[in-house]
Amino acid sequence: MIYLDNSATTKPYPEVLHVYQQVSERFFGNPSSLHQIGIDASRLLNETRKQILHCTGFKQYEIIFTSGATEANNIAIKGAALAKMNRGKHIVTTEIEHPSVTESFEQLRTLFGFDISYIPVDEQGHIDMTHLKEILRPDTVLVSIMHVNNETGAIQPIEAAAAIIREYAKNALFHVDAVQGLGKVTMNQQTDIDLLTMSGHKIHGLKGTGALFLKKGTVLAPLITGGGQEFGLRSGTENPAGAVSLAKAVKQSFEHLEQHHHEMLAMKTELQKQLVDIEGVVMNTPLKQSAPHIVNISVPGIQIEVLLHMLEEKGIFVSTTSACSAKKKEPSRVLLAMGKSEEVAKSSLRISLTYGQGPELIPHIITSIARSVKKLKGMR
Ligand code: PMP
Image (cartoon, rainbow, N blue to C red; front, side, top):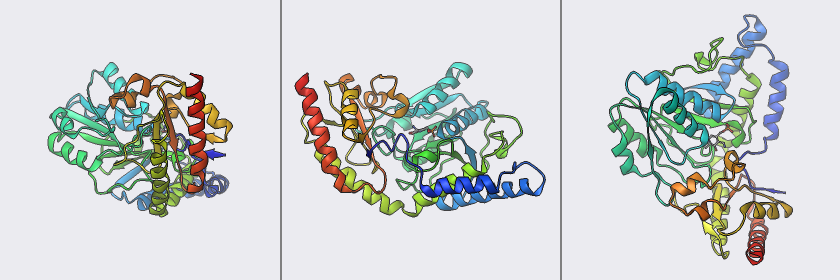
């Protein structure tokens, strides 16, 4: 099996599974309980926060554990906008965000009357910085820009965007969906970001684990109220085993970040080079400023699901678009935003790598894609 759908999810590290079980057995207490078993669980949870901050280098932040990035994006975006709405109701995001961001923005518009501006992207899928400058206003209260796009792998200029936001929108909080970049692409931890989202299962952690990094002092309106856990921002009994398993995945990813980055980049670069030589293949992932683990191609004129299943028969697992949109069978919003034709946008295939997948796999991947494309084109 050659699993090339690592942007949808990754296989948990054995250490992650092991630690989850250990903590579930040994620290089963409710962290809110006053007795020693509860205190031990609470201490462990707080130590785990510190460990994640230490490993990632985001030392000036608090951590709120969540069930994943969808929840963290919702808490961050709606929580920030609602906390700031007395200062203004203008919010800004890009045309290529994950649905958990886009839908949160849409809900703020329909339920609370927020005014949304969308930052366009160029043909490489990178945001247009001049446009960002032009749309920011004194009443802008939130800007959300993803770090790495989950479909194309395009890396957004987060540091430059932060500087522009601070200059042109002094009242705005800056949120970054860092799901696809964290642990794979380095980010300057000194960048002036207020809220940052991550997910465990994209870095060989467990599904149902994730976190929101919140710069100390940032105020959010809580969406999930109740017992006041997680600094009052995410009520509900905490999941110490999930948190520790997340810390384990973070540690593993960050300890080997450079080595993994080089490994994946070498493989991705070679794949990109060979894929464009296949007749009928269009490359959607930019050669520059793109993550080391994502290659997105289109094969206009064929039914892309058929290609996906032909590859599956050869033991190669890829996806047609992002996992969250795959079942909708609509053309990719991200590719349309890049100015690609409808035909290109509805025939895209995403190959997403992880660490330890060596270059010896390349000939089989390329031959399988080339043969299948040729066959499908011939049948047409
Ligand atoms: N943002 C991005 C960029 C993603 O790729 C994903 C996962 N598809 C999410 C958010 C949502 O993450 P989760 O599955 O943890 O809810």
